Amino acid sequence: MGTLYPPRTRGRLFSESIPTLNDAAAATNYGVPLLPVYNAPPTSHVVGLGQPTNDGIPSQEEVSSDLRRMRSGYSAMLWLIWCVLFGSLRLGATLSAILQNETEFELAAGHRQGRLFPFYTIGRIANVPCIASNGLQGTCLIRGECADNQGIFGGSCSTLTTQATCCIFSRTCGGSTNLNSTYFTNPGYPGSYNDGGTCTFTITPCSASVCQLRIDFRSLNLAQPNGEGNCLTDVLTITGGSSAVPQICGENTGQHVYVNFADLNPITIRVSTTAGSTVDRMWNLQLSQIACASQFRAPEGCLQYYLEPSGVISSFNYGFGANPNLNSLGATGTRQIAGQRYGICIRAAPDRCTITYSLVSVTNDSIRIPFIDCFVWQPTTDGSYAFTVSGDAEVLDPTLIGMGIFGENGDICTTDYVVIPSPVVTDVNAAGAVFTDRFCGLGLFAVTSQVKPFVVYVVWDDNEEPDVANRGFRLAYSQNACTLGA
Image 1 (cartoon, rainbow, N blue to C red):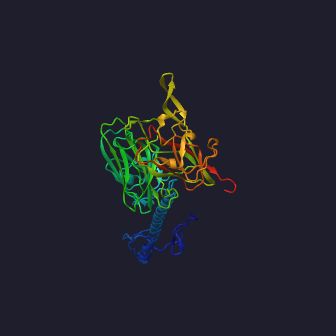
Image 2: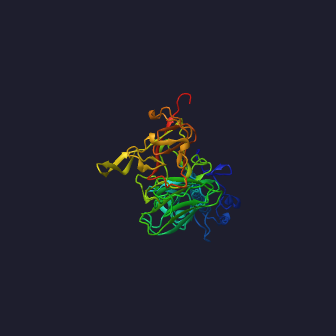
Image 3: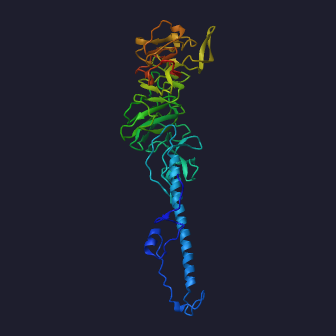
């Protein structure tokens, strides 16, 4: 802001002489009440300087002194009014500028009315993300507005005023919201939920500039699918958007999905549960609205969108342990959820031209090791079950599962598989092999792709019965720097 000057009065600085305050026009300009007109007595009534006449009329000097005092008082009052008004405007503009700076997610601003503080109006606070004192993401609001919307105060989100709080919105079954960064939890969260029924929650875009909803599964633990991969005991469904979301059940904490809004129509989340289950089911879903113009908006066709140059991707319900449910043949069931078809996208980092996918080393709960005429259970730390997407995982020595030579490729992959566009495999054990973009079986070589956007497509068919003891996949990805000429 430039050099500050006091207000001017018709071309004069405020410190210069001002018109007499009993002048109607001048009083109107200064916004002060018009003083009653005082008519000085004729000279014949003045008997001496500073001495009143016998009829009680003050002297001319006293009149002049009174007028000077009144002018001085009104000058001070006008300075005070100017300072308060200027201070309010400056504070409001500064606070709004600070709070308009969005965080990495560039979440869309909502629509709210500003609130009045005593003596001044603070600038409209932007509906931007903030981190509350408990580590949860909230929305920066005036405290009164947070309370009006049944929010929870999560600590200050401004260094300029204590009236701004990081407001956390937490809702449960039967609720709805058009507020950004809302949490949808099971009744009694963080405790478990053992009742049966359907818990429904709806989300409406907070403005016409919103295009997507990101749902982060901060906690999602439901019953496992049956042995054929169907979500019969518990299931989470998401409807109302213009993009499809498959049914989800099992253990999915840490996963996320993106859903496109269909214009301003609401998106509905339903969690259906069966009473009597021994599963300690719970859920805490963070709902973040993404602006249409945001650079963090997921590309079309991407159910998931990862923003970091390296990390881990996994199929829904991937886990170290096998599904405790048996299939119809009495064999160990699969953790793969039937009927899954979606894309996992990864944002390309600057100066990165290719991406490599490889098995993640994981700690399985245990594996069965032959010992003379019996079996012993021994923990392992390897990537053996990090890629088990089709076939019978129990017919293979567990120490061999995951090796690339037990993977399959191409036309053999017709039921469950992942698609990695234009793959390049450099493993010496794959020398001479020609690879297409379909990978399945019980193992995977490290695979590199240069097709952008970086994407892995997941295809599980509707019958998972043959896929005994499969976990799905858990892959590490790493983007590679561009080489000369790339």
